[in-house]
View 1 (cartoon, rainbow, N blue to C red):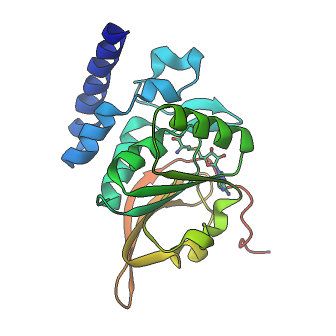
View 2 (cartoon, protein in one colour; view 1 turned 135 degrees about the vertical axis):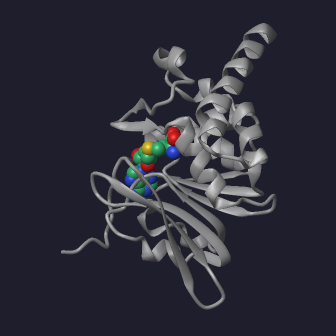
Length: 217
Ligand code: SAH
């Protein structure tokens, strides 16, 4: 078993060096966590051989586990500190949740597909993560009861800027969100004392956020 894990560790280090550090992600905490979290544990059994590929993979229910580089890139942009309370919309496989939980104080994760949320919860529990709260619900309005948050990671794409979730950011809080329909623009929103700073990051492709209620009639 140990041998098996060591081999996987080597594969993850290779993944981080060739796909993530090579493309400019520099935050050493993020790079270390991406080497530690067993991505292979969160993909479907039939995709084990592809766990470290430079691509998203199907997790069923027409959803995907994001490409490793995108997970690292978005995580770096959130500038997570050790005591942060982080909201994640789109638990999916639970892989990104694990990465966030290793960096932050507590992660609040929301998933709309019950089967995915339950599987992720079981896996993360088994793996020993204790700083995660789970909710099965439509996350398009965030998680108001637990707000405010220091960081918000959105991994399903709303058609428009999710104003309700932005309201749940602390002063100094950061949100990374892909906005758009088929192709999306990734944004970082930072709440300042009086203003919101909106930065355009890269172009991305995510699955749509379902159940949005504040779309134009
Ligand atoms: N970050 C995850 C999943 C990305 S796929 C991973 O890497 O594994 C996006 C996820 O968002 C899917 O699991 C999808 O079911 C979920 N999702 C879509 N719309 C949602 C909504 N309105 N509220 C909560 N989760 C949603």
